[in-house]
Image (cartoon, rainbow, N blue to C red; front, side, top):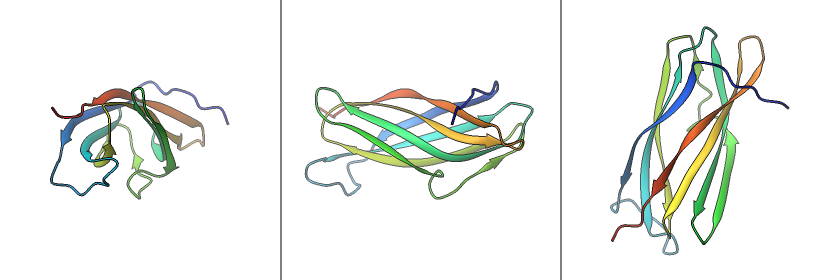
Length: 124
């Protein structure tokens, strides 16, 4: 399937917060919560159907996470609407994180929108 870009559909990473109070596995002891907003400033209604995250622990593991929906939902965004959510990643080493959301327009056209790269920095 070929995904296209739609002018006016964009993603912002609103905040990234180290949350040491969250439970994390021994081998990945640094939990981060991130807050993301998907904006539909186009003239078409869209639906987000899935996502792909690439978590590259620089010089160590690179994990690709793909799946249907976004935090258990497949949000429909009319023109001018937005969808905000938060989720988390756990890391063992400083990581660069990027990815994309995938979806379709009301006409059934598949599209993708890039998630801007951000860094999860291991605390000192």
